[in-house]
Length: 366
Image (cartoon, rainbow, N blue to C red; front, side):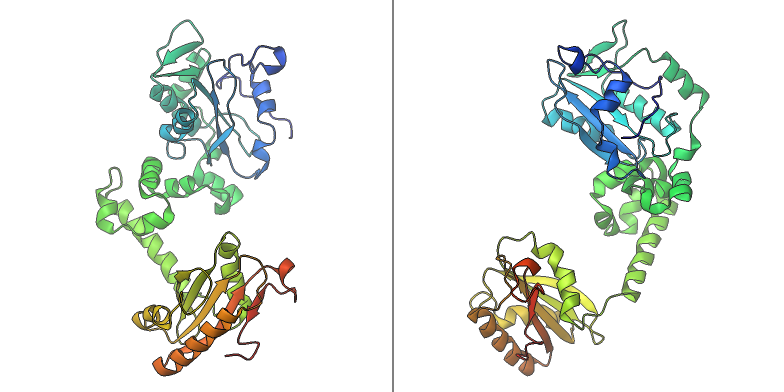
């Protein structure tokens, strides 16, 4: 890991372990302890929590969040939750600056103050005081408090400035949301669970969330609507089995049992919806035509592609696969919805033909 400067006004750490080699009593030793953690993606900030046991030995190095350390990005509950789960008696925190400048930003000061308050810090002459079941390892914080009061911060670390320098891809989810709604971003994202969950919120739900209001609610709702319309205008067309293979393989490689999928398509063979209609070996007793075509009729699909995985990795069709394909082909003729293909998803390394899938359409069986 490349050499890193240490900002001396940041938190220091008490001795951990019984020997000099185990002692994390200086920022440089903490950097050594965290070597490699920040190398995964040098363009983003990582916020690390280090829980300690009763003997002051580190229990783990936990990546709490990716992005600038601020109240909108690192909420105290996100920091203390892993410490509680690990039955820790003390914690220490650290984060990197991708710019290489270790000078703390306004957000760094703010989150440090919040974490200190969350730990119910009661200052004393000792550098380590007991608060709320945890030890908050800290030095004399008078220099830190002074910097907070004067507002001497690194403006380059603010999300909008980082976006201008590194692009929006370098921002974490919290940072992206912070650029729109400000300090309530962390609480809002925690409540919604994810961007996908937040996108389902109505204007009324957004507006009533503390700290949002009508203007920010409208901005968020508008962004999700723009994204939705953009996706609708660029939906991929599934005209060949290779496209279906690329769509389903990331999901199928994690499955230990067979899953039967149905892709509902419009007149341009663009995806309307992907559904799972059954699990287990693809056979007539597990996948009946009525289960396959029920959603196709409900969503007014013009055509469907069915697919299922073989956990063994060999996509060669079984007798049951051939049987259910024939049943679906006959049902499609009666219902008037085209069955474009039935694809068996496997793995290239276990496919006798080295393709990774089997297409009934390409084999001339549909």
